[in-house]
Image 1: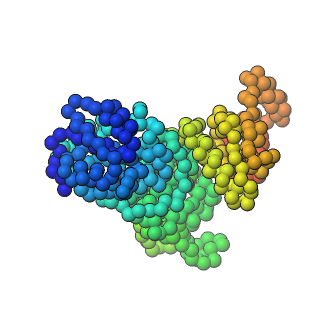
Image 2: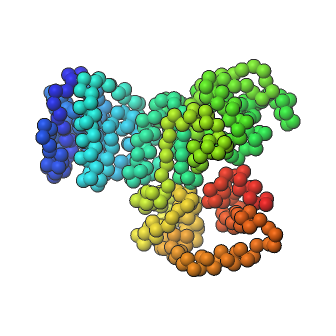
Image 3: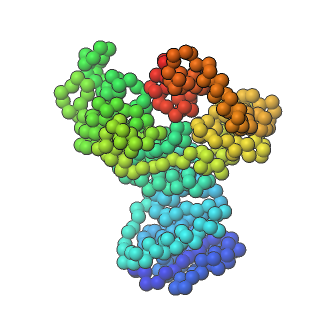
Length: 459
């Protein structure tokens, strides 16, 4: 193991000599020694002989790649901070690199404005812990079955956070608008955690009636209520040793929140109709499209439960906040849809991509997927043009036209009706028609839970 640092040394590792020349000049600073090499083997030789503060290394190296170099560096010199770079780092690379102890993972095209701040931050950390010895255990390789796609800084920060928190058992709260991919992030947390050999059980707290939700979570004894013809294990028992994903936790009734709080406190619970107490070892990951802090202030969510769940918060950016990811997402959905349906290869034009990037995407990634699926079904050729994607290419209505439409809608309201309730019900019905009767899609488009959406339809 290397001795404590006595000076700041930066090592650049990249096969591109032009990059090494640029980075050396770009990062040169007083009291900073910059070393460089063009392959991983030489980098290890430098680490063995020199106390290196920070390493900036490419993923693509010979005779072994940047991921293996990362592991060898941290084994040889646990204090060294390693920044990996790649043209287009995959989700799996970012999460695995973070788990293995990488300080950061950067896209090469962003280095001109991101590399210096990241290196300066790493050097500052070294200044703050000169004598610290913080080895980071190497995680086993994982194939990363979860497909999270994106090159934007916003979504890659999510990937890195997943890599940092997956190994712990701390409860996680995933926040984000409907359709942003909260369940996908929950699956990634599970699949990159030590619990991945066990199952991740998912339950949608907003889709199950209150009188059945307690039984779903905790199980019940035979005869404990009408229809309970046999003993049934609940989700907490089924997820023992694994992960329990509580989707739309913000829709959970207060009466159930109390019982959930007990499980989070000591891991104990009782089946409905039982007197004995059971215990479970479950990692809780919860998700919501609501602002739980506001729900707490309004008295609809318990404050103590909120703080128990929100040990680590992962905020998923809306699609409109990561427009540079739309081309990759569109191509991914296009390939998956055509392959699943046995369709001929369909390409998407540059103009169509541009039109997709002008849309607001209230339904986020889910809306984009549905849009691509609809475009594939209606495509007139093997190339999607803006005209094949009406949602994305539709011109924005003028304010005057919008006001006229609102006036017409108000005038058509039944006499004596509560206008806001009637308008909401009409919008809900129209969204359901557009979603071809899919309640979940329509409720997500309206930003409501299934329970709230059904109430609107029944008004």
